[in-house]
Image (cartoon, rainbow, N blue to C red; front, side):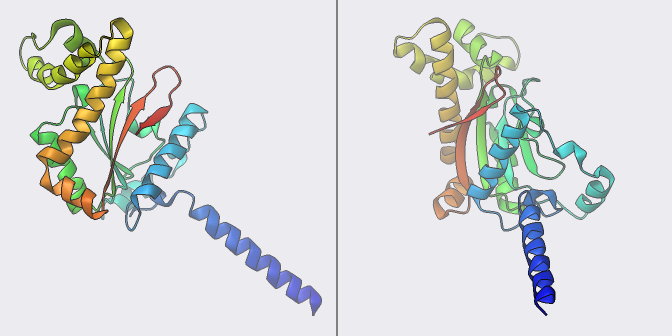
Length: 231
């Protein structure tokens, strides 16, 4: 009798441990963001970034054929990441996220134009995404160009630089120069972009105010691969 009880207790411990292991990365399922809080979503991103920094990526080890078939039914990404188009800053890899897990919006200089705003509104309003991250990065070419030439650029590049110019002016007013000026302008622009999401999109601002969505600012470190949350 004691042996049977011990066996049953051992089985119970095993199933509890197995259930906890499955809950470590809830975004693995086809309904990645369903019911996930903003804090849970941010934790998944930061845990994935830690794996990236340590070269212990997991997302690509999934059964991709099975995952693709699951996602044919629809998508429920748990986070939106607005980032620069820089080829060194791919959010899916940086955060070790698989198919269907994050809704990525990429544009040079991580600016917030109407197309970007509409894309984010779609994710939070129709897909149920609970976290919006604005992520800049070290040595951003768009910011460097804005520092060096203002908004004087040919073609549509000038539009991008115009969006960054206020952040550059703010950095220059602080008396910084050289690399410190560029670093300050990058952080200023991340803040300005986040503010633009709130100011230019009543939908995003309203969902943030109600607690349905959390908006966070981050900066990617090219040298280490780490993503730092900016308060």
